Length: 172
Image 1: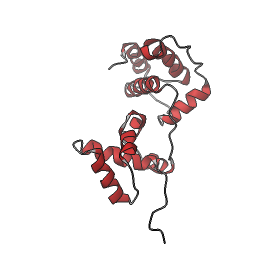
Image 2: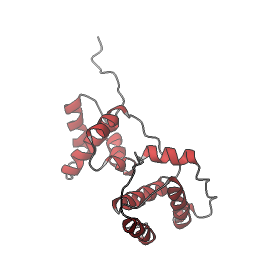
Image 3: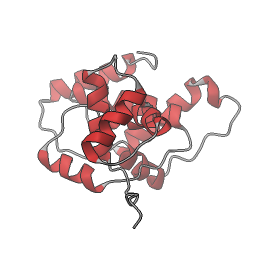
């Protein structure tokens, strides 16, 4: 009988464990992470998988998660990469900043900011701007695990959040 284990998909929960391990042990090399993960789970990885997991594509996994969110990560195995990863990474960073200052962020707001970032990022210069459709917005939110929340803040807090939207820098 063949002793090889069946392949299984890596879930976002697996990726989260790897990212957290690296964040708590930054001196650890990717090869050591491969060995550790394989010993812990019995699931073999290679260095290129760990490199991708530690990259920007999975930054949405960082931070604190509720038990419900962790359970959802166990079921999510694949994350598609968008067509404009630099733009989406900058948009996600902006969205997280706005969420921290309790600004109201709508789908239309995200689309407007995507258009502004498209114009500001040099790697997209000379290319036709995409149509920021509801389909793209839904996939973007899915890739970065962005949920809609009802925020209860005073009007002054909302205005302060909107003012700080203009001050946000791409490189910050």
